[in-house]
Image (cartoon, rainbow, N blue to C red; front, side, top):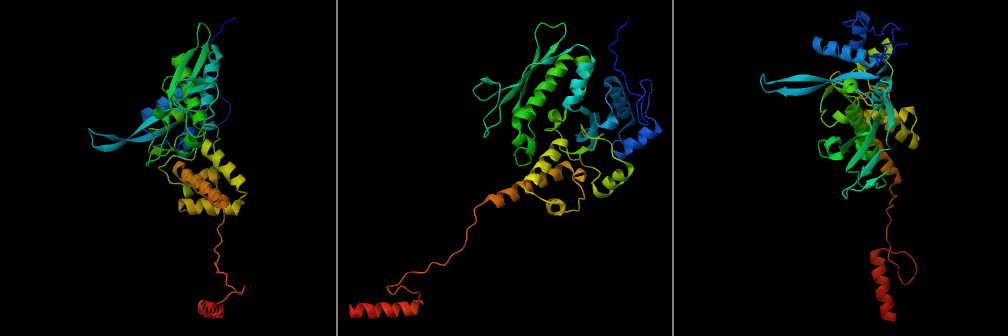
Length: 333
């Protein structure tokens, strides 16, 4: 019996990749156009096809995608796009497992400024300084260990504040980076050139929408038209993590659909008929608005009250009446 480490590429479905095709088909090109990278240079598109075939991940099921980041070209003095191929951490795990040599990973550990590694991060006020993860590979005596420093990867707003998920789930976010680094170190042949969103989020200031976000499914033609109608075409779309956070905050506030849409419109300055149509930047504004709404609801109510000075007679009087009464009382005393 012969064995092979070649990754099988599914050939089921109208958009399925053939492992032997050398360019995107007409149907696949139409789908790429709907999800934002049809205008990428032909060379980048062919490279993306190669990575999808090599990894066995489905670009139309959002398991692997490509985004373009604006960069300034000092030679031509023009803005150009640099395209990066990305996959979620689950996608990297799938690729590692398909090699037949992946044997799991070590538990994630975190450390603070003191350099002491901990199995769980309990400091809610401060993010960890670093996260560490090791990956076991068949034939290796020790796990391949990688360390990710928080300040090197954490995404921040222009004012320096951490982006929503990096602020609310710092240990989780940096742990995904550490695991991704360890997986790529253990399986360089299979994972080189592929990045997770967490690894590049800090660098991504303005990006073109890529082939989806990990974990989502391709939209129908009608939904695609709606996306084109309601969504700015040159901005990255809402991430899965942002969707999860928004859904949780909306649920906690007991918003109905109309309440949610009204908040979206107020936060973004435009009509947004569904969460999926938010850009990543707009999603941050919505999250901030939801946080503020919760703060306002929990803030103690201060009721204005008029302070009335008590008088000797036990009744409320006007200032003039009070002065007269006091004078008479003092005279009789």
